[in-house]
Length: 247
Image 1 (tube, rainbow, N blue to C red):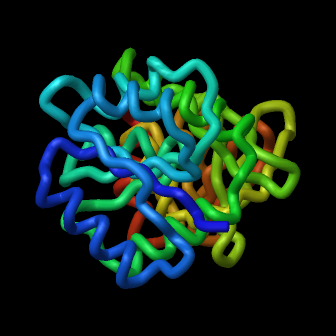
Image 2 (cartoon, rainbow, N blue to C red):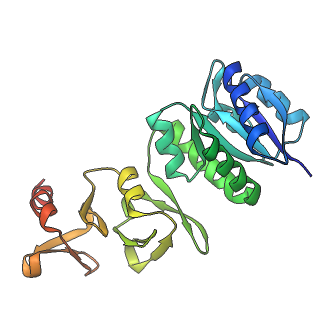
Image 3 (cartoon, one colour):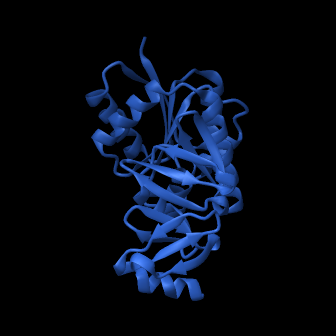
């Protein structure tokens, strides 16, 4: 059975480019519908079935977020397409929602389609979309989605006490001793989480400054967290860390 894709973008050239890339690189995929705006897409999605929606962020009659806000129940996957919109990209990353930067790279498109073909948990996707819509409506990044081995967990950003590298994964620590192994590396968290609240004080550690109890000079220096954890401070980050403590 073909994997059905709907393209929503207000630029005809962008729709043409996506359709051509899909036809050339994604066997078993068929573009079953196209729309140039929010209103047209809403009608199209009510009248036809799709497996994946390739959805532009900014359109003349609204945004991709507006379209999703009008859909009562998701029955398809969603991958956003966007120009270099820093706010939108940060919102996608906070909520672990796939996106493609324009002009779309063929390899990234193939990877996104393949992932969408494997991911059919619409209940989780609805949670992600709901959180995305809240983020974009309130312009506040106060919750982040953590993909763990036991399923998705939404955490309050300010509640994260520290993050520790574990290969290509990380351990995310929350108050009360909660710890989650998450399929994101430390660099990704460093780029997403707000500074100066979060501070990279070692190649393997990112900490929430609000949970630092004190600094110990022994063995080159440690940050002591309020849960008792002692986090090493790298020599090149020591001065910046001590300055941050005094703010």
